[in-house]
Length: 213
Image 1: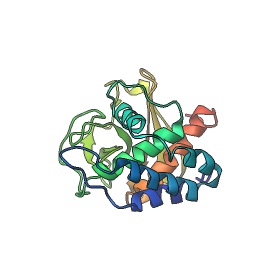
Image 2: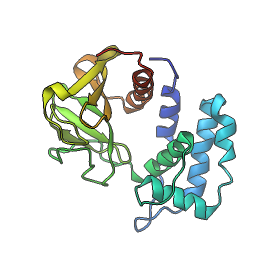
Image 3: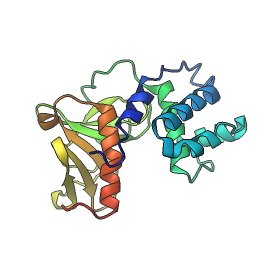
Image 4: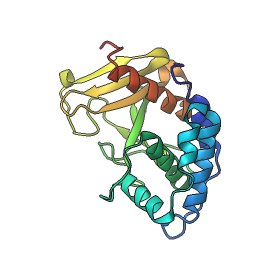
């Protein structure tokens, strides 16, 4: 999976030090945001000019964008790169220090820790499925045959597209949402930077019509 070669980018972003929150706030958000932009510019030269153009966003607009990406109903951005940078900055405040998966959780995509949404999933060594929160990386068990976004449970409406080494893209025919995942029985240990990098490629290939069910 080397269409975009995004794995080094995701690894570098994951290596950035966590940011300390204060009473649920985001002190130093602008500085942490600029650090994320610098990593994007360094790891993806083709995106460097766009990334650096956002370094001078003023505080109020940056706060509005941050709130929008967390679902506060404000006007956000229509640039995927900017949304990506904001999400990666927020992750620095929310990443859970405990990497162990929870024993139980909701049957949907809503993280039981921070309330954000799962962006990827995996099947463990026993074949049980776990969702992974896009913000805090919290993991919790979810049903194998169920759309985590709309609750659809009819097997014929739940399809998936296979990729390399156990990677696959699940799609619900009822709501149209997709969920990238990896089967650890084929791929080995869970590697979130690799999974998230592969997810970008899987989604791109799916939208381009380059895969078959």
